[in-house]
Amino acid sequence: MNSAALQHIIIAGGGSAGWMTAAMLASQLQGNVRITLVESDDIGTIGVGEATIPPIKRFNAMLGIAENDFLARCNGSIKLGIQFENWGAVGERYFHQFGRFAADFDYIPFPYFYLKARLDGMNTPIEQFSAAWQLASRNKFVPPNNDPRSLFSGYDYAYHFDAGRYARFLRDYATARSVVRTEGKIASVQQHAHNGFISQLVLDDGRVISGDFFIDCTGLRSVLLGQTLGVGFTDWGDYLLNDSAVAMQTSADPTLRPYTRSIAHHAGWQWRIPLQTRTGNGNVFSSRFMSDDEATSLLQRSVEGKALTEPRLIRFNTGHRKQFWQKNCVAIGLSAGFLEPLESTSLHLIQRAIMRLVSLFPSAVCAQEDIDEYNATTQLEYEQIRDFIVLHYHATARDDSPYWQYCKQMAIPDSLQQKLALFKRHGHLRIEDKELFKQDSWLAVLLGQNILPAAAAPITHVKTELDIGRTLQAMQRHLADTAATLTGHEQYLMQHCRFIAD
Ligand SMILES: Cc1cc2nc3c(=O)[nH]c(=O)nc-3n(C[C@H](O)[C@H](O)[C@H](O)COP(=O)(O)OP(=O)(O)OC[C@H]3O[C@@H](n4cnc5c(N)ncnc54)[C@H](O)[C@@H]3O)c2cc1C
Image 1 (cartoon, protein in one colour):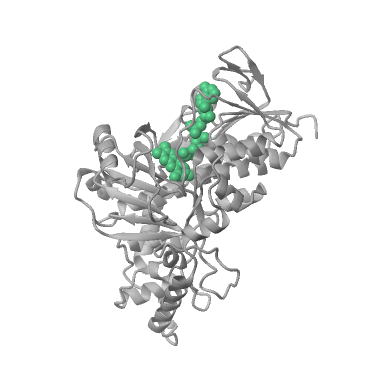
Image 2 (cartoon, protein in one colour):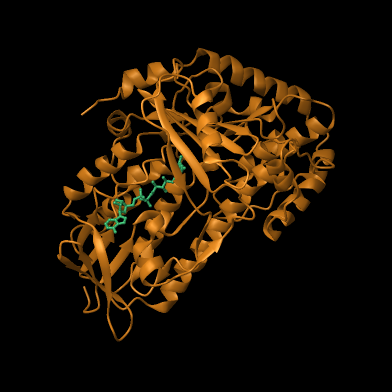
């Protein structure tokens, strides 16, 4: 290592963000840099964050974690997508599947031909062409196969799990790889007089923890980046109205569904996340349109099963810190920003932040070029996900409450406006290379919420030799017939990764 190499990284905070960061840094740095994590049992963690998206599999795999061991220890289940209920219109539902729809036609994406058939009068919902939905709707699960010619190779999956158990699982992993855990409450943060870099954390019992690089994982408090370095917040509350949630756990649903449910109501939506031995429930709402009491009572009235915990209120702001990295401090997790949990993207943003930090790994000097690159790419990532989430609220026929009337009419980001305008012509979607949600995800939500282009893509008119209707019918039949023969989700979990309580 050169003389400017980092010697000691301090991670402040031990929620999912803190322990995911500690585990990955321990694995990547292999003992070459000291790592200390400070967390406070008195303050605790946010205690939600139980639905994920497929890239988490890669994160765990990079740590060398065996999937079945992880699922068994974290009360995990499989997630093939999200069922959205009452979003496009009250009484309607659609599925945002993980992975791709059925096979492309001669290298031309499947959605173009599907849209042509839809515009010509076929009314089969697009989810019928998704292996993920064919499995999910029957409560089935098998991992995708490796044969690229198979219609059961292109779908994907993620997990539901107990967030507290995941953090403990990663804590065991990290501390076994020389990360030092310190319990205590950070009372103040000291900075070097000459450059404002953070120098040490002072705990409320007087202990001092010094380091040369600090990762702020202190959750919504943002003790280091927000409170100490004074980095401001970009608020997206005008696009995404929800600022509150009530969460509670209930006993397990009799049917262990391999998908999350997102059920819209007149001032927000409710989640239902099935774990092996319990269900996570929450009501995400806007305090401008619903009181805390009403939100709590709505949640209590609509959950199924026996209540295992009291309802817990959580407040949040939607948006992000104006910089994610300043001086020798990077914020990861809720301390960096928050986009409401509609598409379960927060743990993913944590994972991306960690990997970006690893690839731009700083010296003790912290080069401004690295900081600028980190901040620009992180901000773009937040904006792209924001647009996808805003789409769910804006592309709706609902106007049955002041909340939905606002959403329908609100000004949306230019980037989303442009995407929608392009789609509405011929069904093209402009997706950037590293954008998280790809064409098939956008299409699931657009069509699920009844947004169709004016005309089919011109290429579909030229390819006249294809019998689109017959091909689509054959695909759908094959998907449905095969899915019906596959293993049930619960049976899969019981066979491979039954929950082990510790
Ligand atoms: C309603 C809701 C639902 C969500 N659902 C999902 C979901 O389904 N999927 C998903 O991916 N994400 C979800 N999230 C986001 C997810 O919960 C968080 O991104 C994730 O848990 C990471 O949180 P964190 O570690 O940043 O913060 P926290 O869990 O709040 O942890 C903060 C840590 O900092 C410590 N700390 C704070 N201050 C101090 C101090 N002064 N001294 C010492 N320690 C301190 C705390 O003790 C704690 O250890 C949801 C969030 C909300 C609000």
